[in-house]
Image 1 (cartoon, one colour):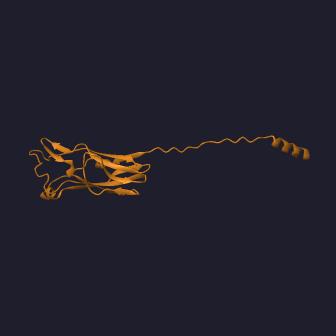
Image 2 (tube, helix red, strand yellow):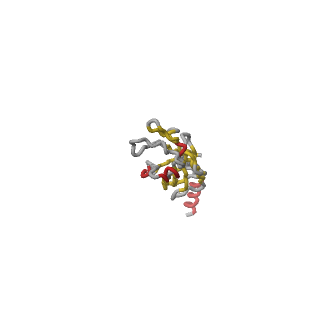
Image 3 (cartoon, helix red, strand yellow):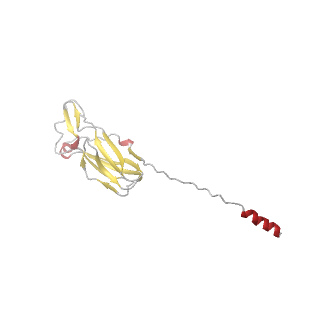
Length: 173
């Protein structure tokens, strides 16, 4: 028995341990998505009464935008042109105000700008220092009051429509 134990120790003495290592990398790439609520792809500001022309018309779009972002981000908006034209008449896009606010799924560490005039230049409407998953943003659109559009109706058109395309973008920060 002593010979077996001694033989086992001698055999183990000549065995070498070969350790191998593995490098594990976790590679995180930036992802930003911004989706406009499909039920709100068209926003209408309809002037129907004298009060509408006098006070302006608003459209509140709850959960208008949905954001997914790895890390901090900014959301910007811009109109296609500085004016909305119908025939020989036009309305300046900067007569429309946008007001962003937190939607039903609020973004942590978010800053929303107060109401601002629409422009054909990128304007930041909110920013966040942290990422978020399916966070919602409300947008209120408000057309001018004070009878600003009183001379923009064109006879025979019911209704007279002035339109522009808005582009929302998300960028990492």
